[in-house]
Length: 155
Picture (cartoon, rainbow, N blue to C red):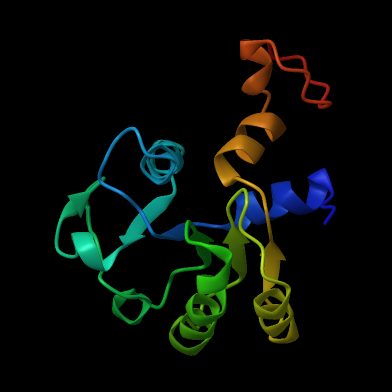
């Protein structure tokens, strides 16, 4: 899976409401700090986790299922095992008319679910993190000494 920087940047630029499936309320868990980072960058972040349903996270109520999300969700960020992805994508396709992107976190891949989403015109990103990609594409990782391959006048 290879994604151009232009493609990833366009996905991140057009996305406004992100559902983080498998979000944790524990601040040391990756799903929490990725969701927090995205919310601090201006995205509306909606958590989905039946174990935390009803709790508040970044000013939004955590939902117990995808079916409880508002229609304006345009990206689903999946923090679940690869074998759980087909059901998540199926629910997202059925209940989210504004869906434009299915994003699977680092280590999460499912070719069949990706093909189902792409067949419906949905963009798919697998085995990547939107937080890392946002930081890389906007020059934020350079401040930590990483060579991002993105040339910018920002330090």
